Length: 266
Image (cartoon, rainbow, N blue to C red; front, side):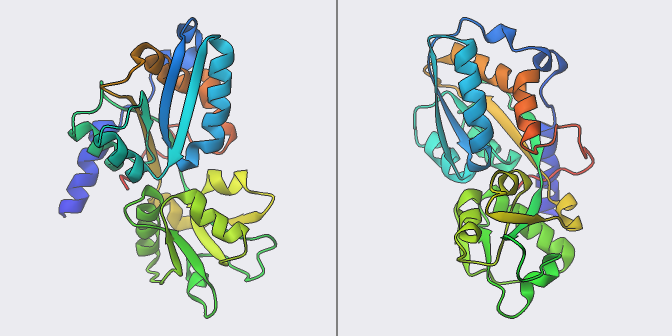
């Protein structure tokens, strides 16, 4: 019951997404200069690399420095004093640790959502069609560690399916879990749909219904001690703009309105 209440509390705190005004145009960011350091969840890698390049093109004299990793690890770095301007997390509960420590300059906004799939070797040689197949003898599975948003989401999905399994490895971010499949070190991994799509040349994605119960909201915030606060605010506005969201949805992310009845804080 306490966990359920915590999920609801976090959801209420961070339910507000990018506003309609923020989504209409990126024009307000024009003229921003200097370095903007962005710490972002590993699952945002490809999208934020594109958004960062687009932002720089729209703002000559600006430079976006991106650092990706597990959301919980990045949150610890921020709370330990790592200098950064913007934090984009893969779950509200991870973002809450930064806000509770007093390191947010304002209220985070949810800008996209993400959903799990089962990543399998190309051609799906094990014939995996759902979560229950991951428990078959000889099937090796990689999961994200529980403290990482993708690991918490996987736990929720497995519980919803009534499936219990022992992974052969627990990884610190979703890219590491996915790489185990790409390299042939495991047969399957629970990863975000966007990551599987980005690695479509080396893995296939198997959709499963229980993933609808473990959709993660992605909040973003300007950090309190941001060295380039004006640049940070402009970058967040750009992420929320029509241009930024077009990049994200093309990668497979959902907008905050999609499946709004399902909120997960892991």
